[in-house]
Image (tube, rainbow, N blue to C red; front, side, top):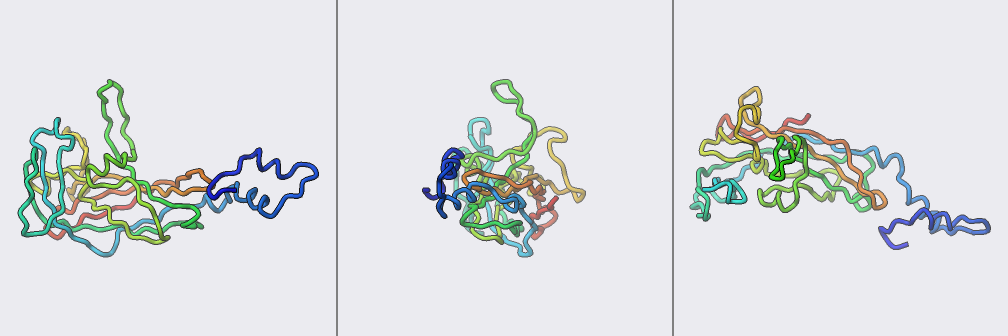
Length: 245
């Protein structure tokens, strides 16, 4: 059998017809065509990293949001450098942003080579009326790779170890304003109660992480781990942090 090619049920049955003498390879194909119960007991253990990182960013707002394709841009730079001029965008702020990364452990008997694990990131999106007139309900959605890249985000991460640290650069989940404390969740709508603050009056946005593994050519997903990305807005060195549900 070719590597990663799933043997059909009909082929498996043909190995064990009356008078047949199944080979070792055929028995192996039978066993490998079914998922072991332990393979479904998997998931993610996530916590904010103990280390705080810092990057310097230039923040821009579009002159015409409706025609820009992207209402804002967040560009990494080095402190002291002059912000790049971007046609159609106004530079509104430059500053260092301190933030936490995510310490992640895979739960279960995950074989990296066999199961090809990856982490899927889903953003919470508000209820939205589409141009067709239909309504897209509020909920968690995985962004298209091209859409995520437009905002310097990633919607999935390929995993090569059972314990990893992922830097999602959480500032890219916020929409900038001239005052850092007035940043909003990216994609939020300017209306009353369109987003919430924590009890410390810090804006936050919500995402969830899901472990996806491959078992005999079929993708299986774990239960999601929800988290808030909380803007560190109480001082210059207040880091963006995560509250894990």
